[in-house]
Amino acid sequence: MDIHKDGYVVLRGVLSENDLNNGLSSMMGKQVDYKILKNFIDTIFLPSIIKNQQFITDPHYIKFRFSNNNNSTDASTFHGDIYNHSDVKILPIYTCLCYFDDTRMEIIPGSHIKSNDLSITSYNKKIVIPLQRGDILIFHSNIHHRGVNFDKKGDRRLLQVFDVFPDMETYREHSNKLLIVTADKITKSAGTLSYYISKIPILIDIVSFFHYHLAYYDLQYKLPMLDISPSDKKNRYVSYEPARRVYTLGVEEQNINIICNKAETIPHGTHYRYLIIAYLLLIVLGVFIVYKILTNKIFLRQLKKLLSHNRFRHSIIT
Image 1 (tube, rainbow, N blue to C red):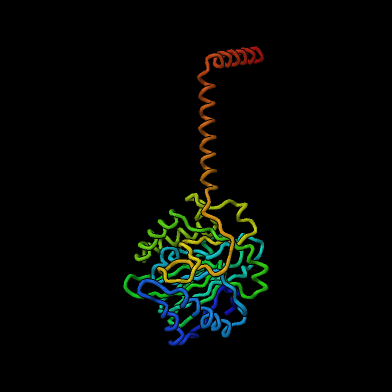
Image 2 (cartoon, one colour; image 1 turned 30 degrees about the vertical axis):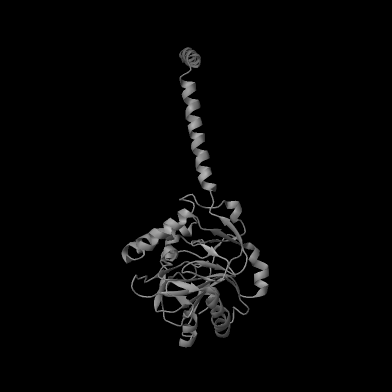
């Protein structure tokens, strides 16, 4: 499997039971000791990746997140972790996932490469990848993917290491292009709704189908008027962050972003909200002006004379 052609690769069973238990030792009920988990990432998880492939040799990552089913708030519909708004054909940044339980991932091979295909053509290429405890999944961060098999009862424990640059040279060249759009109250509320929808397979499949076409054409944040402006996106790698972010390594709840390295951030935008308001004001102003003109008696008399004069001239000519 070619990571640059297909966009993803699975490292099967590379983590031992001892490795996995080391990572799970960070769990404290529904909370996580993120200091222990980061140590697992740096001393076991990333070294296992370096040992079992050739394209990530000296990884530098921005953040990570641990979840157990609750990442369905943002991961149950097709999306990219990063959206490529630059001229770079293949995004040189990866997402690395560590599976502590058996589950499945749905992915669209090749969707990490810029293409002129229709969204339905891309969507029909989707495949389901079975993943087992101890597997590692690596993909280009802009490939379209979604988690499946979310369950209230069973465990779906997952470690996600985001914004992984494969080596220091790539980090120095590309890290300044990364732009993270942080979550707000509206996106968090939408995430709560998505959490409950994800528990109903038929419903989430329908929602995911429609959401994919929005994401494919970069409309998923424009329609609810939460997107940043086109000028902010230009020549950037844009990541929409759904959960809250924490900068310290302590005991915290699951499904939050633990920030390890700096990247430029910007809040969800009001660009399109103000644009629509401006359009509405222009329409109202236009209607008001037309109304004032049509109700102006002097103007109407002059218009009537002009029309009468034109009709008279027309009758003489003919």
